[in-house]
Length: 204
Image (cartoon, rainbow, N blue to C red):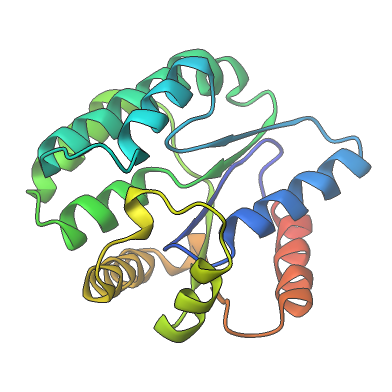
């Protein structure tokens, strides 16, 4: 389908997206296929600084401030990582523009037109090729978060918030079903790994 796609892994906390993006990275490395892997927020030196600020348990930002900080981190990724590798290497991203819509609009209620305006301004020619959306129920999410040694600010919202966010993700995936694959993260991890890697082989 694509020789050098932008592939995004989305999902709420505890959904397994980071685990599976790492599995894909290992597969590509083994096959000696050129790629880069970044995360949001984070991904390069400047974005990682912003990440620490956003996720710090000491931070108490207004929801619009959060949006602008996430956008600033994204801009640093686009300028310093994505633009340089676009159409040259496979780009794997742990959360991207859908996260902003899901968290800041569906989760926090920020105007969606404002979010789209910012993303359109930042992305310009950049377009996501395919998205793996990882879905998890509240029971498994809680169990997985308990196992984490350190919880950041975004790991500590009420469950109703995460449900709104996940509902938002599902709505986004319904708008363009051909470019999304929903992964039921409540099921066997190894089976999901096979499903994802098979789709990766198809995409690239």
